[in-house]
Length: 361
Image (cartoon, rainbow, N blue to C red; front, side, top):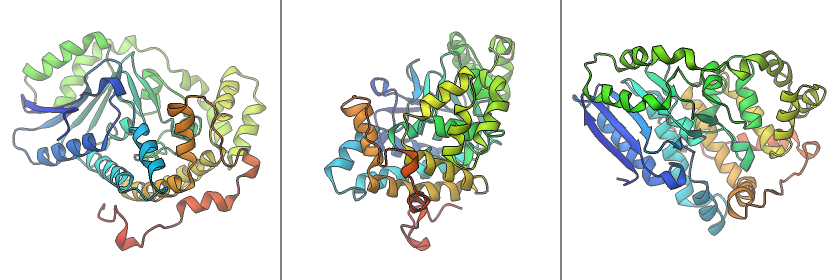
C-alpha cells in the first residue's frame, strides 16, 4: 500500500486522503494500486456506507498522473514497450471504471488543482457521485498541452457535457473555475474552502443516513456566494465554433470571431499538438455513443499508440523536463495532419480477447 494514500473508517464513512503535496497529489502507480485495493475492500464493507476522497493540502486535489514518470520510463525503454507504463494505464483506467460503478455514495472534495487523472478519480456515476468545488478549484483536461489526449474516461464525461462544452475543454485544455465546473456538469455543489473544517467535523460526528444529502444541506447557505459562470456567457459561441467537423475548421471559425474569448481560445490551441488535437476530436466524436467501459478500452488502445508515436514524450520534455516551452510537434502544422495518421490511433493493438481491459462490462 502507498504511504501517499491514507485511509480510515469513521462514522460509517470511508475517508481517503491523497498525500503527495509536493507533486500536487499526482498519481503514481503505487497510489493507483492503493486506491484500487481500498475501494475493492470497501465495496461490501459493512461499516462503510459512503466514500469521501480529498487532498491533504489546499493547493490540490490531484493534478493528474505522474507525467515525469511517463517520461523517465518512456525514454529509458523502447517506446510503448515498458511494462511499467502498460501497468500504469491499465490499472488507472480499471480504477476509473471501479469508481464509476462504485455501489455506494462517492464524494470528492475538489479543492485546489484537479486535472487529468484527478478528474478520473472524481467522476463517479451520476447515481452515486457528489463533487464539491471551492473558490480554489482549478479544473482542466489539459492533455493536448503535452501531446496526449483527455483520457481517464474523458471520452465519456466530456461528451456528456451540454452542447460542445466538452469538445472545447478537450481541445483547448483551458482551466476552469468552480462556477464553470458546475455549469458544465463536471461538479455538483459549491462550498467555500473556509467551511471545509466544519464539513469534516460534521462528517465525522454528525448523524446521517445519506451523506450526500447531509453535505448538500450543509452547503446550501453558501450557494449564493458562487460567482456567475463565464462559460455560460460563452456557451452559444462555443457551440458555434466547436460544432465544426475538423480542428482546422474550428480554428478558422475562432479566427473570424473578434471576441476576447475566441482570441484567447485560439491562442491556446495554437500551442497544442496539431496531431493530438485532431485525435482528440475524433476520440470525443466516437465517445458520444460509447459506454464507460468501451470508452476506457478505446483510450487504452490510444495511449499505446501515443507513446509509440512519441508526441507525448516531446510534450513532457518541453513542459516538465527542459521547461523550454518549445515542443517540436510532429507534424508541426494542422495542414500536415492526415486523416490516416489520426485513424491509426484507433487501430486495434490486441485481439478483443487479449485487451488489457477486456473484463470491463
